[in-house]
Image (cartoon, rainbow, N blue to C red; front, side, top):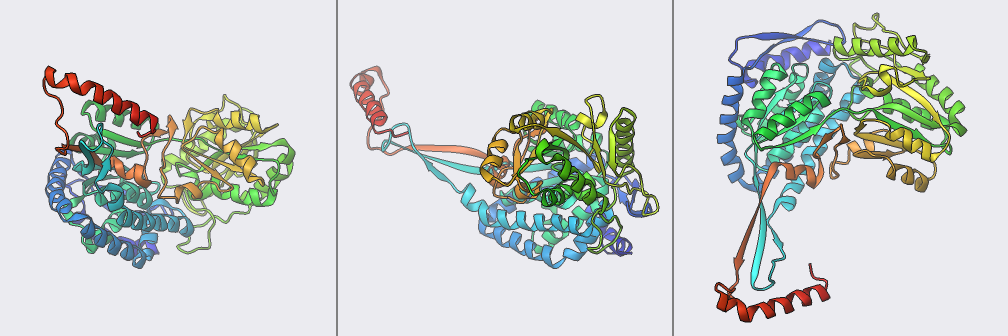
Length: 516
């Protein structure tokens, strides 16, 4: 099996690539089979301190090497990612249980993020002239300096994508990185990191630690100059508080209960096929995947029938090729949470249209993609994030009711609108309170747009990754201004007296000319 080949080709280097002095190891299981994939070395808080110190020292030379050097290294890394894509796909599948196609989305995203920041970092971060308070008399420049060492805490569900979306811009901006890898995603992260090391990123610059989040993750927050966290809202609050106590920045991508609005002018068959992928990609274990489908009554019967049929026809499998439509859940805890949400909903009166049962004959963590209707607020899956292959479908009467339903959540990470009329779909999208809104796509339109900011509102997080906004997380801006000597600014009361009238005239002129 490819997972066993992966274990020999990547896992042999675990002791070299993970900073660990504890002597302790933890078995990591393959979701497809339940067998031990490898024994992962575990780090200690002292390892995090050492990792930050080494990264901090390496960062000085990395920043001093300049943008052109970093661009060359990152573009070489981009090429290595493509050359090693089969190894990376094996790593992602072995650790997460997702399909080959959905693993490919991760490789594509990692390469895209790398190319973007290699090419764009210098133009975004170069020193900029800004208008001075007194034109011609003063000149002002703003430059950007790296913060130093960035802490990146990544989850298990999208190890390549989520590592790349935080680590690579941090490196492009001239920082070092200490990454706390989730134990279940460490192999994928190390395979990603190895491509960058082989391309010329100093090994000391990108440190990887593992272990319990409450211990090792806390140490990362305590020893870095900015922290990026992707995970649950509850843990994100803890990270935010700890970062605030140190007066460092934190960017947090947290939970979601993402809605998809289906307008009554859609082609029901196409909309159903697109919606099925949006809901069940990576078995719903994706922060931006859809968990709530809101369909207008005019097309509800036909859409729901097509949707249930499409979901029912998905091919589940553990293949290391492109023959499966849906894979496995990743962790036993995700299987248990999925089963609990479905059982609770059915017991309280929800209607099960399809799915609703595990498939142990395929593997220990397989569960059928599940569609529920008649979901009410007293059911756990109504408002809580399932993070599994469960979606609820509800019916609304008109556009306004659809917007209200979409916004009836404490979360606001991602949303989608399906409609034939782009103008109408955009109007609905404008009313939805979410960090990203896709039109006629579930999540990939915004997720792949690495030149545009991505993040959540409400309880879905703060800060943005991707685009210039995401890159600016990793720098401190500094303003430098100097006097040109054209005019001496007043220093005494006697010097102010003749100058005050001139300054007022200047203010009136700037206002009249609308000069900012």
